[in-house]
Amino acid sequence: ANVLIESDKRFDKDRIRMKDKSDHATIENVLDSRIKNKLHKLFEKGILAEINGCISTGKEANVYYAKSKNKDEIAIKIYRTSILTFRNREKYIRGEYRFDHVHSLSNPRKMVKVWAEKEFSNLKRLEQGGVRAPRPILSGGHLLLMEFLGSDGWAAPKLKDAVLTDSKSRTLYRECIEIMWKMYNKCRLVHADLSEYNMLYHDGSIVVIDVSQAVDRDHCNAMEFLRNDCSNITAFFKKYDVGVMSLQALFDFITD
Ligand code: ADP
Ligand code: MN
Image (tube, rainbow, N blue to C red; front, side):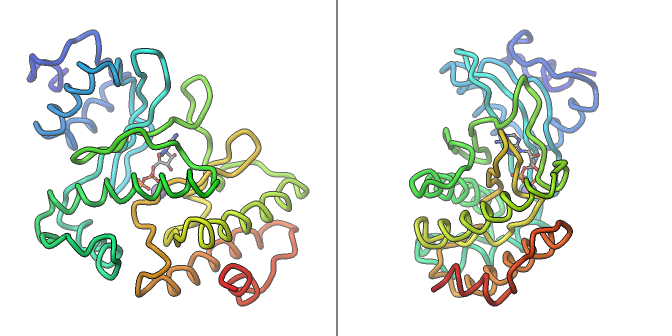
């Protein structure tokens, strides 16, 4: 049953413990030998001390919960290399000066590497611009290590799953607009997949996640992506008694 560990003697049994069989199945699907090697190096360096299970399995990536040697909680995002997902990624990479040097987007492996680096660099920009997001730790190959958001090993809920009072939802709506403004004006980024699915509700505020597709505001499709983000956010907060601004007013507020 324990194929991951038994098939790879370089892994110390005691250091990688998966919670249950379903975790084994999912981790085997994404962990090719390169990723295992990379993880092994991180164990040797003490950057990782244990991987304790799967937080999320998505179409594009799986996210695992881990701890460092000094017990810091870490989220590991491992990106998929499947053909289906990389076609979609291209339009977020092309059309931006940061990726002018990338010529081999037809190679899924290289594409995923660029994708992981892109998320890392976007998280850095968010940190520098003062937008709450997981602190990036490192990216290499197909994976990204970042600060884990949650408490006692429980990941913070997505905004869509948070239970909000009317007054809290009003505060969060304002917070969300401020985040979009800061992302655009301080970090020069457009999230491009912003919704209640890619914001966590942590310690009473919003934390932005999943920025691999976020583009520089000079990207040729940035305005289209921003309009779409505005529309997702407006649709979500319309469910609450917050008195949302019009789509155009929100867009103008962010870009003016
Ligand atoms: P994708 O949507 O491409 O699968 P995400 O970056 O949105 O990837 O991550 C998937 C899920 O994993 C999130 O919805 C969230 O529940 C969880 N997650 C991601 N990053 C973190 C983190 N740093 N801390 C806690 N949970 C996280
Ligand atoms: Mn997501």
